[in-house]
Amino acid sequence: MNWRDLMCGEVRPEHVGRRITLAGWADSRRDHGGLVFVDLRDRTGICQLVLNPERAPEAAAKAHAIRNEFVLRAEGEVVRRAPEAVNPNIPTGEVELQVDTLEVVSTSTPLPFQLDEEGVDETLRLRYRWLDLRRPKMQRLIGLRSTMVSAIRRTMEEGGFLEIETPILFKPTPEGARDFIVPSRLQPGRFFALPQSPQILKQLLVIAGFDRYFQIARCFRDEDLRADRVQEITQLDVEMAFPDQEFLFALMETMIQAVWRDCLGVELEAPFPRLTWAEADARYGSDKPDLRFGLELEDATEITRTSQFGVFAGAPCVRFIRVPQAFSRAELERLEEVAKEWGAKGLAYLVWDEEGEVRSPIAKFLSEEEIAHFRCEPGYSVLFAADEPKMVSRVLGALRLHLGRELGLIDEGAWKWAWITDFPMFEWSEDDERWAAVHHPFTRPAPGFEETFDKDPAAALAHAYDLVGNGQELGGGSFRIHEASIQARVFSLLELSPEEQRAKFGFLLDALAMGAPPHGGIAFGVDRMMMVLAKEPNLRDVIAFPKNQAGVDPMSGAPSDVEEEQLRELGIQLRPEARQESGPTGR
Ligand code: ASP
Image 1 (cartoon, rainbow, N blue to C red):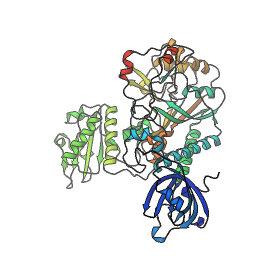
Image 2: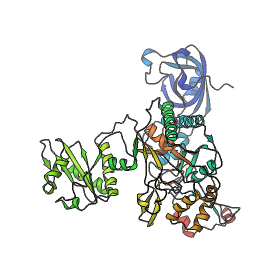
Image 3: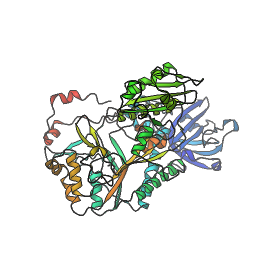
Image 4: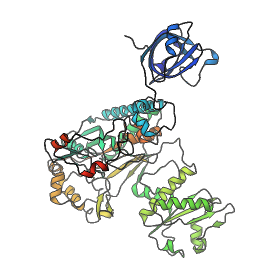
């Protein structure tokens, strides 16, 4: 049987006079006494069906019973709409189908929400995801995602990379999140971990001679969820032997260009600008700076060393931003709240009013030299942060972003990219009281730090880089350690005992000792890239079947209880409180 000759969104004036069959969902029905109009919808759009009792009495009679989301098949003649009935807002708006035969292929129970309803509760949307996904916005996003993945694959294949799958049941791979673990029935009491990334496996693949690898890989990270975080992410994972940073950056730029061209028809300019981590931190207070606006940070540490204002003189670091607005006291109070949320103790400021006079409780403590340093045109405010350098970056970086949005300084139409290079290799973890790898423990020290990284970890730079797009970290990677001895030194610095090193990473150390070529790579978050590309603030809206913010799938109810028998086979006994702890399943 022929279900359809055209897609609903494809019918055009050139088809006028043709007899065609369409199939799709009833998007809406309008009963005009005699005539019934039905908008028939599929992935490509909508075509208006007209059911005229004089032309097709049987079909028109059936049409009265049609409800939204019934599946219909309609056969008839494409006609031109009367001029006053033309709908210029849709591509099929000049034509309609005069139906001769109508078949109700499938009916629908009453809907939990209408497809054109705004602001439907997210749990309800996720519970009835098959309906939610029928909405044009979701059809567009999921379609764009397919286009994106296909552009990625094409670029990688053209670059000579092989797509190789790696196991989902594996061992912990340290990317800094908690592992999901899976009990083994055949080895009771033992557990697999779902990979947080295929990091070690991709290194083993290039060590194995597959010198250019990629994969559209699923990664699992048991993190607390926010609007821009999910536990199951998809990433473009890349690794190459004998790596060349210029080649890798250029290939990734080509990939991003292909994605933006295919998905949006936008031509991006390459190469993308580069900033060292130190520069990004100094100028933007962030390692993922949004370059769509200015408002750069400036330093005042030197000039305030002898300040009469004790807060400045006593702080290890003083920096500020000049904001093109003379804030009122109430506005400054609100900004102080924002600064405090990010850890500041207060917010010192100078306001240059329209007369060019300075307004500030701290002005009287500042020397002429200081005032001259902070002088602005009339109608500006200077906002300060004085603290440890890390805190100063955090507070001013956050204020910068906040003000960029509040004052409408962000060029919303722009695509601004930046490679961030020369990251620190380690950071001190206050909670664990030990050093932690900033990227991951397989990242090599930047040239020149091979000897010293474990003697002076705070000063060591890593051969690591990120790609930032419109202020979002989209990709990150590094050159890897290919010498077993350096790898063991990094593990030791991270306080892994020789026994732990063997137990956790013995196979990697063995592989590194058997002819490992220099190698390096990168990974891009596909979901995150979709958010940026589609300007979609909710990460879950670019994923067909995401979990909700509680890590639950409201549609299937997963995660769910398992039979006692299954637990017995696995050698697992639940602690009595475990069942009570797990709340409702979200359904
Ligand atoms: N494995 C890293 C990540 O998932 C990427 C890389 O170093 O290639 O972030």
